[in-house]
Length: 307
Length: 313
Picture (tube, rainbow over the protein chains, first blue to last red):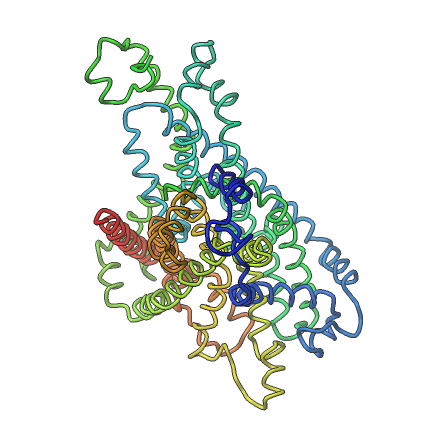
């Protein structure tokens, strides 16, 4: 954050450092070619999303018969949305609520535990701290899917599979979040301030909650945001852990509709549902990303300095 | 006060009398109390399953007799399993092509954004990052419909041109998956590079300008070295990601016919199918452990090389 402000302030204060008038190092001449090529890549990023928006406004018949990137003959978006919410006794609402449960509880708990642990590793002294950090950081490079199968078998033995706990418990753990919090707390929380709080009689936990937590805010938003996305988008874990559609999150639910849509027989009937429900699934995340970008991007900057 | 502030191992060893022992042990306990919830969860979700997987990998499920102890038989079987090596070779081929393409693109985009020479750079930055927010199932659906020849844009294209291109024919499916994965993760990597570039002290650019350095020289001498640390991180994360490709080959067969995706297309898909449809859990556990070991080995090799290079400067 500090570098961002220094750069923007010098934009106004630095005189023309090089030959050209008005254009400075902090405000160089805009380059059309560079903008074109970056824009080309941005188009590749947007194209599938544009396709999704256009096709969620089509009726099933238009979806099959009309060109993919132009609207259909009939505007059927609201029909499709109504169909998504009412199909199969409104199970989509149940999937949405499940997803919210997994995301809100999972992201909150995992971020709090990462903040607590990362802060302690950066600011408190205890034996075995380095070993702890080393083991946790090492775990980041273990593929999640390699763990999921033994996790499933363990959870099955204690009867946790097919319950929300099977999805929640693994999502409480966020080693990369702990790493970000550790790096961030080491830089952003002055030790002297913590000592002062303790001299004033605050206990360790109260010091953490009242002094350190507000200072960790940018990292907290970043970690919260990324675990939010990870849990919302998680596919593999709920796929193996859950058999009962009543506990499905949106991702598994949509794929179930997708499979029904492509099997012969009642095939053609469901594709507009699949597409419209996909759009409804990504909209909240995209909205959150755009609205909160200032906060999580500043957190990411501080995380990347050391990385 | 300073001695109290830094109760590090060194300070404690040189001046044991200055810090009351009781206070130090109390602080140590508090440190552990802070990490205990994370640590307990880590044991439950990470360590116990790995130990359990190691235990399971020593057993085989037999038609007669059920689960029997088999020693290292699963591992020797894996070493000679053409299906495992086929999937393994596929993810290695994929990694060798996709990771450099994606990271070079991400780096070029980050440099372009950081050059301050783009119009609408804020908009471009968020748009390029957006795919990261899209779940694998939705991403696979969109690309499946767009690249598929049944309903997709490619059917329209083939109709116009009179061709019969199929991005999901067996020889091309891996390339199409590469297009999908690159779409999903380039923006994420770009942001990591961009964040590292923003952390470069501005004085360096002013000094370079005074010395008469041009843009390319600034990129070579200041910006690229500043990206080294984040390059190591992104390479490691990308390799971990490509080694566990699962979602796309698991979802695609229900959308496109004759894509050449087998039950052992990637090691993870193979492990999943072994454990859940073939009920060979011991063999699947052995496979998962071997893949984890190989991923860790590669991640450490990259890290050590990255650190060596950083030390040489």
